[in-house]
Picture 1 (cartoon, one colour):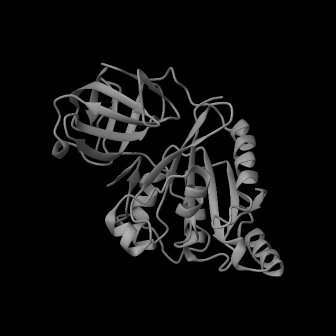
Picture 2 (cartoon, rainbow, N blue to C red):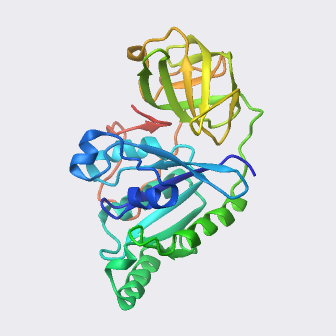
Length: 301
């Protein structure tokens, strides 16, 4: 089985983080403010074990509209989306917004997960399922399976694991032979270890003691240690979440959105050719000279 990244999407408080905890046993809300407010603010990370010993990385994104930039940083490198819709609320504003974003970036694989099944009766479950089918027409999820679960009681969780395992067979493997590239989504320091960056290896393979570059500043970096799923490894390959310990680099010198890549593998430019696609329901018009928010990789420019 190739390496594999699962991501969440959906409206605030529809149970994305609780679902990941039910699947993995890990609480991806790591910030004190997240614990206090009961909502996800930044990206959360975990992994899912399978009976054959394989693992899939997981990225849990926030659902609140105020943290949309954090959600956008997380969708990079996702192979399969668990699109969460709560049975007690149905399709909501951020449901539509997240669906639009995933369509625009070209995500192809997903499972619709109807959560909080323990809070409604069977008639309500059927009504919400109909609402989902109508709202998800003409999207990458229009034919996706709807799996009903309760993170509270555990109902449907094992069935969902089976659906995830089957969906992994439809994901196109990433190239591990291309030049390595990792968009950084988190930077922190550990006492006695130093600066650590995390991200999804988009392509290629990063090896212990590799001499790499940090872009766009194009500074030289040496890979001192690699962790994948909390285990020390000699390599991190395309499709894996990785924590990379960089030698002799301070945390203040690195920001989310920068890219760790092989030396001389990227060209630095302040211009880019893009194709603009306007959503059919948008009320905005883009004209020559319009100012827009621009997201690339894990960065907002």
